[in-house]
Length: 471
Image (tube, rainbow, N blue to C red):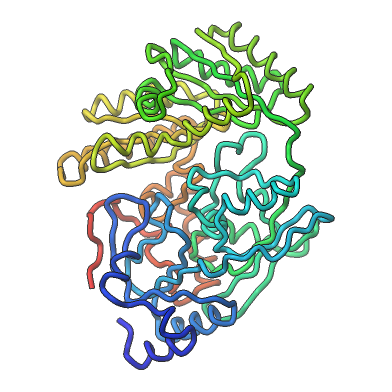
């Protein structure tokens, strides 16, 4: 709890308008996009400068008050739930694009910039920022960096960590540090920039970001492939890569997801198919058409039931927009939608999908699977009802089996959502106890009093129960 004296000191930093602590305001910041998790903070502070962030952190560190940096709260791992109370540090006033440097192909911006707005700004001048998380219309760049966000274009272009070149961030002591910058080559010391990316707000509070940009692709085309068999879809993905073709996007939807998306978007999909692949290629027009033709031949040769090329760029965009709507479509089915994130090598994709189907049948659950087939990143999504505690127990058991299967197939427990609270008890499966101990030592070096987003990444806890902490 904040003392009245500390409360007044914090208000003096940002002003009364930007210090929130009414019950309704605290409730609004007590959860993020992760279902079944809620915890009430003691206050919400919305700073506007690095100096304000520095002063707030210094005060919080002195009084051992938890600090949880937050953007739009779209993460799906409980990463911004204030599990131990404390102060939510809303970074959305850092919403300026400070510079788009066309000579160096970089941009420098605040963490509160909405991802889709940044895309639009750079594309307006013929440049391209590839990372495209599903939540990009509402998520912030700072949240993308903190969570190590991915997206549909990860196969060809990589993910957020591959584009962050420099950071400004604040330590709990209030010290403001910079790492990286605009240099393409820079090996001066440890790569602290990469360490901060994906650290989920546990090491410092990011206040400025410099990212790499690319020239905008000249054109793009979309191919739709339908398969009667899951293995055929997986083999098509394997053969495309083996042919040395790297599409911008290869998305996978199983039959159950196809039905829901089709009902939502009215696309007229052939719902007797076991799965579908959405494949987009971009670049120079001649090369794009050559690649699309080769991919179509591969798909026919492997055994695809149907192969269609979108007639126009707009039609292709409509199909990919429908894919982006998968979570929204599934969310209409039941009161609680739990979307997870497991990644396996591409060669094990079909096995992983079948394992998910087996687990769903075993626990009598409705689980639909879609995801980024090109990089093996699947999103098994379970529709349930949080009021049915017995069902939620089965959901937990099912996802535990799914994560163990992912590791067994040479994969990982999270490809792009992060660890947060929901996967902390599985982290040792991927990194080992020694890896966790090393991470904890790094955490202690940055944050010896453990005020930055405590209870995340390392704490071993279940996703449930619904309310973690009430004030």
